[in-house]
Image (cartoon, rainbow, N blue to C red):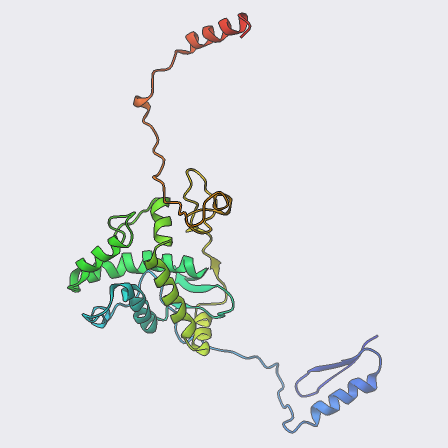
Length: 283
């Protein structure tokens, strides 16, 4: 039987597997501390949430256009905008840089995503939905920036403002230099945020978090493959069949043939008669 005694002030319990005297000795050391306890109720740490990070779809864009000087390189625009908005809104955090998990808010709930998936969410929910309309109205270099985006994503003529993409277009974007630069810059910015601030942002998002899921997983460019993309536009299976240096380019999407283009089929009665004739002839 386990021996135990309790402190009369804070009610903390001290135990020993066999001897009561050892449990009492622990209590005596506890009572003989330099700062003895004097609490009569259980002690509990509490921390108030100072602010709730905004949803990724409703950010404050104050002074965003003014921050884009006339000499900024187009390849740095997307990452610069992220830095500006995250410093102002604190809408995203990478709490533990040893784990590939970025957190942001969606519909008042924390969402957990991989860095690559988060960059795609940022491009769609921030750059396309919120930033592009503002830049189109207020930034003199917007048209030139759109042209630069198109030139670096030849699979899509209007990638900055388009809302839906085929798998081929998405694969092309994920393999583009623009996407890699943006992912590297955004990841570096999230990691460079002081650890205490990263923890604070994550804490203010709430205790729970849902997974985004592999919604934006890139697929192999081989026709009708569907396996996860590895490198050079191919999956592991097709990669071993390729020559060194070869790149598998995105294929066009399969288009269903309209019914009116199909050759007319035989009526059911004629088809049954045809099959019965084949069976009776031994075919």
